[in-house]
Amino acid sequence: MLKFILTIILIILVLRSLAKLLMPFMVARVVRKAEESMQGRYNRQYSQQTRPAGQIEVDYMPPPSKPKKKRGISDREGDFVDFEEVK
Image (cartoon, rainbow, N blue to C red; front, side, top):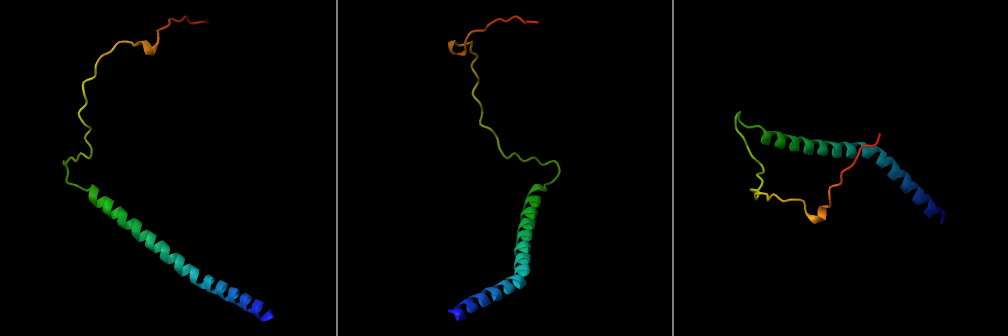
């Protein structure tokens, strides 16, 4: 039983020391990959935005609207009530 507990403690200590040694390299790698990804996205976006001077590009054109009908006040909207200002 004592041998088992010492083995577990030894394994935990070894893993902790390996993690302390390897974590900076692993974190640096992840940060570098994220930086490259963001740089690639920025470059793609910037290259799409550059176009010759005077060129216009329309991304969205709303559908033609129907002529609006003029309507009076309906019964659902209620009645207009005059009010007096109280000082």
